[in-house]
Image (cartoon, rainbow, N blue to C red; front, top):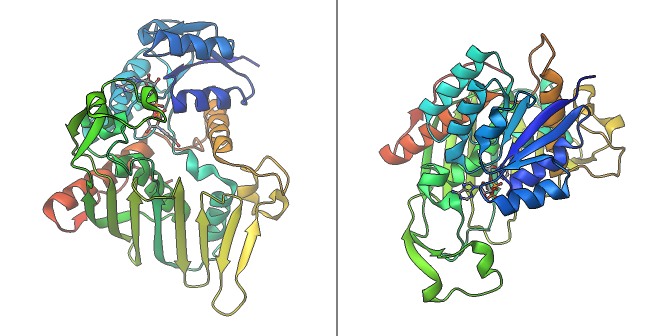
Length: 387
Ligand SMILES: NC(=O)c1ccc[n+]([C@@H]2O[C@H](COP(=O)([O-])OP(=O)(O)OC[C@H]3O[C@@H](n4cnc5c(N)ncnc54)[C@H](O)[C@@H]3O)[C@@H](O)[C@H]2O)c1
């Protein structure tokens, strides 16, 4: 079987996670790394024996041996990098959000279709085995008709005004922070699991810190050290720390969600609860192998992940036997495995989130921003494709 050669753009949190996950997929070889910093790229490349490391990503795009690229850079770079990669004939796996505006997202969807190249946006959180189990239960009718969908995506890493990251700045992260960064994962999961689409919403966003202390030097420099006034610049912030959204799904269901990066003690709590006319399910990313199932006339249950007990469609997302936990890292493997299987496959609908799904999240995000500005309900345009 031909070895597929791939490249990773970005050497931060996601660059490393993608590189490690790529190495768990059969027939794929990490051939090149692009980094903004030559040192960071070299360190990662040497550690993982990746033959090419460069600070010029176009050098990688000119290499005919490279088949695909992973874009793991700040959000504002997704559009130019994905566009250049598609124009160079590479398959593209892009981190979320797909882009920082609707127009960019639309252009990427059209370009990927025109070039006939595989395209994926990394809404990997769909692929926890218990999330797939919720989807399979809904498909089997176990939940009945869905009435209520609710939840949160809460973190605490930007609680203090001394917390700083490129996401805070519109020019690197785009006009939305919390809703684009984590709210988009929640809505992708809600639509994927329920099969319903958000039709209209009302959003309220809040920036608790109108200014933040931006370190003059790299953030690592300040690890374990309180910033003194000589170390930072008081920088105005217009991206949101928090958002609350109420929404209508399909014709009947109603829902609400909060997303927060300032909730002390909540590290990465994506929780989703789905209440149907027959039963309910609830899942929390911080306890990924457990699924709560609620009943009106019977005892509630906690399912523990065990492939032999999962619905058949969900079983394909669990590689390890019961009692052996599968977590965040494994969701990337599940996405990448399906993405690479589709390269070279001549037919079949790809079984992973594509650029159209990324554009879908940009439409929801755009509606949230408009709703917040106008202080009212707004409609969300119908999706390009139901998946
Ligand atoms: N799917 C997920 O679960 C998930 C999780 C975290 C991040 N992400 C996405 O991955 C992408 C990268 O996020 P990350 O957490 O890896 O970021 P990071 O800060 O850890 O890494 C960013 C990388 O881009 C480079 N870079 C280029 N221009 C930069 C700039 N102006 N400022 C800072 N770094 C710059 C950095 O050197 C680094 O290599 C983002 O789009 C983010 O939304 C997805």
